[in-house]
Image (spheres, one colour):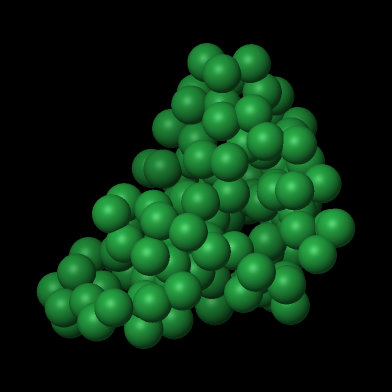
Length: 122
């Protein structure tokens, strides 16, 4: 899927700190914990809770967030539809990485087992 330059620029400028509280509340409403969310984020990015707190405090954009991340080598196993787009067809690397994170947060909120979310059986 080709995205527009305007769409990609908009995603790049979003701050992680503006989205993170939504990730927490979405999952807590569904009975999942902040600890589980942190585990999912760490699996994808390599960031532990302390790292995330620093990134939030610095109000980094998604572009900076993913530039600093050590993306899990199994991230390409994250497939499916998120926000109306098939992840594996997204061509822009940053947009794809943000959608990876969105997909993992969704899977956690939907009650998937952690082993499936973290692609440990694949």
